[in-house]
Image (tube, rainbow, N blue to C red):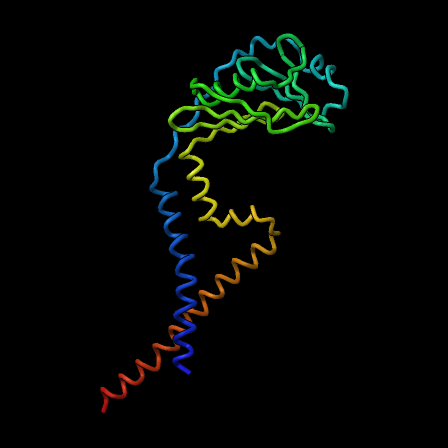
Length: 219
């Protein structure tokens, strides 16, 4: 019986040990690893916004639920949130703003602070869906993802590496395999339960040995 328990303890320990080693390694990388520099904060002259929010809202064909004054490139722009999507209106001229290749490049360079040669690729199709991915040819392999509202997300090789390590550490990578939240929680509970079984089996094996040692020492 003890031999069977030993085998269970051994192979369960090997399986869980791999996961534990990965968790510890990625945790060290996240805490002690190098951090990418923060992107520059753009400086915009919002005093150039001469169009009122009401005038900007009139440019939309749908009911406006929310209006935000943001910066796109070097221009102050009204971001109109409607039930049918996002509408962008230039706060200086009142003209609607459509993100195209050239504007995507301006947004990417301003958001990243990188001026190296780059390629812009459209990643969404359809009216109003102006998603772009701009990839720079700098040493850090900087990439800027731009959504339809002009928002940008800047990453580089180091940041993408840290993102992968963070996903492994928090088991966030499981979200990318089309598993439900309940399934992910079940898998993590199964791993934790398996580790607990391995610990209990270790104690079961250790206690008889300690008892035999005590008896032999008393005799």
